[in-house]
Image 1 (cartoon, helix red, strand yellow):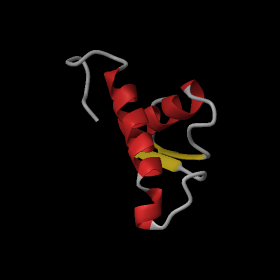
Image 2: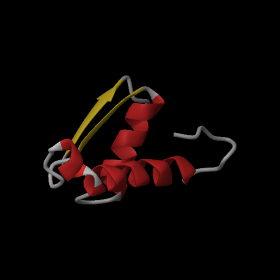
Image 3: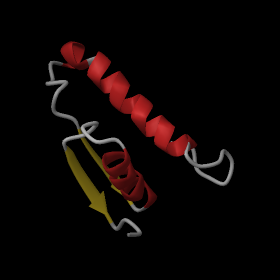
Image 4: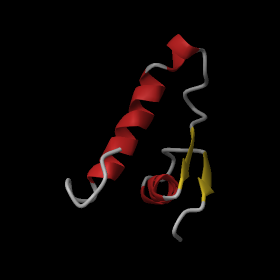
Length: 70
């Protein structure tokens, strides 16, 4: 994801949402269940994973956040 301050928030969250859409669109290719998407991240990535789950209900079904600033 792209880091602030340039570009501005919520661009990083939009990037994360785009990745989830890509994963769902390509689930059959990778032989995974598109209904079960989990995200994880370390530090700012963990914070972003938590933001994704909290701001977009139903978008992801599991979150692992390591050392997230929460």
